[in-house]
Image (cartoon, rainbow, N blue to C red):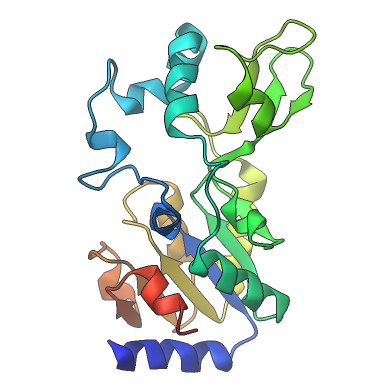
Length: 238
């Protein structure tokens, strides 16, 4: 394993065009639960299946129940960035890392100081009234009673991509641009089973595809370097 980390360190030292693609595993070491592991949100018991709760139809038809789950399970305001978030921010500041593409909605990359973060599934940090489009921060939503309501009377909706909603075309296009032009593509903390996000790595044209994940992924055979280790153990060496 040390040899693989040394190989990654050598790659990074020689490159000024790195793109990072991350999933839930990036934030689990901050204490935020993932979705699909045996202890993840999708394997816990609720009144409704989490996949149903986090759907567009459920939001509009069962708004009160949606917010009960959302406030209890997706409030990441109390969590702080971990070593992976911090090291990525440092690499960006050094001019080596050009973009972070994330499936996470927790905002921890920005909290760590990263600037160019493409959020495929949106963010809890942005919330909008469905009537007048007025912006509200996450604190307002999570501290509200039951359903957060705008001063105009409209329901406030988180700017997160729910099941049944499309990803933002601009974010997809920019993600493809960064990935296709990257020298090194580091994919970490994701099972690479959620589409269309997972399919983005097929746009990578280089020969330095790095996969860092505790478990195997469907894309391991395409990678130039696979590290089956926790992200914290890897990034503390970077």
